[in-house]
Amino acid sequence: MRDFWVFATLACAIAAASNSANAAVTPLAATGWNHDMVIEVGSAPYNTSVTGTMDGGFGQAENQTWVEEGLFTVWDGAQGVPDTQVQGLVAGTHSSLTGNGTFEFQPFDQNNVIGLDGGTSGTLTLAEPGQFSSIALYGASGFGAKTATVTLGFEDASTSDYFVDSGTGIGTDWFNTNADVAFNVGGRASNKSEEGYTVIFYQENPIISINESLFDLTPADAAKTLTSVTITNTGGDRMAVFALSGERVPEPGSMLMLALAGVTALACKRLA
Image (tube, rainbow, N blue to C red; front, side, top):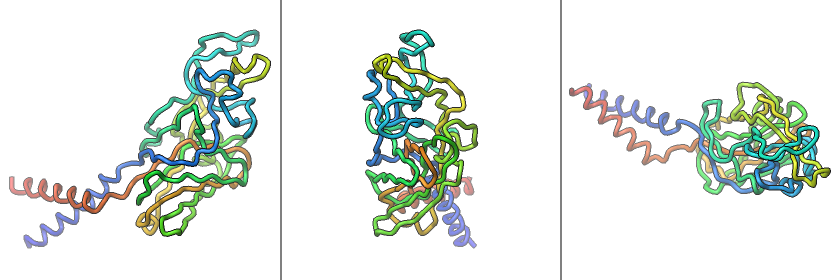
């Protein structure tokens, strides 16, 4: 009976260790970001600060796009007003409003998104391949709901497809109040040649957001080493993916140590 109790305790501890070790997604470093869609603070003339815009497309410097939170010279209808506070993206790591973990924006002064027109693809290559129980993408779409296919590439050259349903996660329009909102942006901006691209035209709206697509990997995929994530926009224009996060499968040694710690705690409690 005592042996059974020890075995049962160990099994429960291992299960608990697995769950506690896999608490949430965290940012994953990757290469492959192909566009700069964020007007950042201090980057005038702004036509050289972006390689595309949400409403104008890629290769277009003018039209509405993402903007960094901070102070800009903003057009008030008659002139540019210096040092006007603008709501927007905030650099760094953030906790997703979904509660599923954290994500990190790419630096705003370089390519910071996977930017996709309809029917095009972009690939993120992981800096540190590994085994994952789930991954998450953070972004939004323009001109209404979109769909996407997310193809996971593994070290053994196999692939698996996961899907973004229409109007969910990264396929959600950037103006939305859905449950998958990860970050409230609150504003957007554009720049025009009339003022030498030194003044922005700013629109504040509390429902401008970054959204989350969370994918739970199948047991077979979680057992393989993930090396890349390819996003294909299967809807129309325009989709921007800002961040990639993942939930790593714990190393067996780590799980065993956590399990043994759990067994010790339970045993001590029983003997007390």
